[in-house]
Length: 374
Image 1 (cartoon, rainbow, N blue to C red):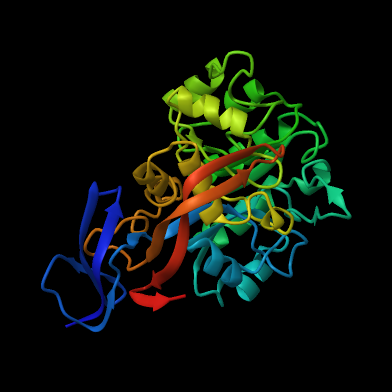
Image 2 (tube, one colour):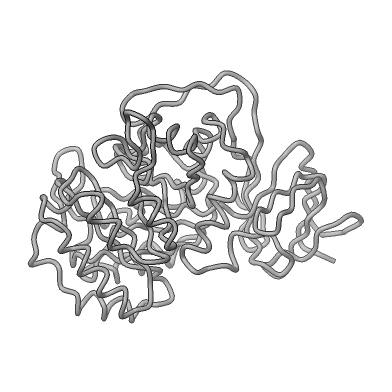
C-alpha cells in the first residue's frame, strides 16, 4: 500500500506531457504510481485542484540572518509553493559554510545555491546600505571560489556574478570573465545579473555559453532585450538562445517590466525559467513570491502548462537536477498543489505599471519527499 494518495487531481507534468485528471500515489519519498484504483494510508480528494511537480524557484535570496537581503526560506516556501529553492549568490567563498550549516541543512524545502564570485557574497544590499559586491576587485579571488565550490559540490549548482552600475560599479565585464573561468574549471554554468550598464547587454550575453543563465531577462530599459520602439528582440539575445543560453525572469524589485514582457512574448520568446528573485525588499512587492510571479505570466497570456514548465522542469534542467521538476513514476516525491481561481486581480511591475487578470494561481499545499507539507 502506498503512503499518500491524491485523488481526482488535474495532474500537469510538462516534462512528460501529462495533463489529465487522475490519481497519483507516493511511497518511499518518490512518485509511486499514477492511475485509478490505487490505495494508500493517507488519501486526499483534490477535485478541482492542480497537482504539478514541486515548483523550483531558480532565483531566491534565502541566507536568512547571514546577509542583509536574505528571507526565511521555510516561511517563504510556504507562501511561494516552491519545494526547491535555489539561492542566487547570496553567499561567497568566505561565508558559504555558514549558509550551509545554519540555513540549508536545517531546511525542510530543498536548497541549492549558486556560489558568488565575490568572496563576501552579496553583503551590502538593503534599504539603508547598497554596495555592489563586484565593485571591489580585492573580493574577486577565483582560486578560493573554485576551492569552496569543489568542497560543496553537492549543493553548488553554478557560479553567480552581478555586473552593472549597481552591482559592480560600472567596472565592465571583468567580474563576469572571472566567474566564467571558475565555472569552466568546475564544469558548471554561470548565472549572470546585469543591471544598468555598463557593461552593455551585448558585452554580457556574447560571453555566455550553452547552459549559462541570463537572469532578469525581461528587465525594462536600459538593458531590455527588446527594443521599445518596435518590440523587436535584439539580435544578440536571439543568437544567445540559439547557442543554448538560458533565460530566467528573476523578477525582484527592479528587474521585470510588463512592456518588455509583452514584447518578448509577442515575439514568441518564452522564458526558460520563471523565478521571483525574492529578497527583503522584493518580498514586500512587486514580486512578493513565486506564486504571484507565475500569475503575472498567466495575466500576460502565457499558457498554464508553459508557466508550470518554466517553474519546474525548466529550472530542474538549468541546475542539472532532473530527478526534480517532474512527476514521472520513480521521480522525487515533490509536488505543488494549486487552484486556478477566478475573479478580478491586479498585478504590478517594477515600474508601477498595472495589468489585470480574471484568474490567478493560489497555493493549496505541497508534498515533500512523498509527504503532505504545508
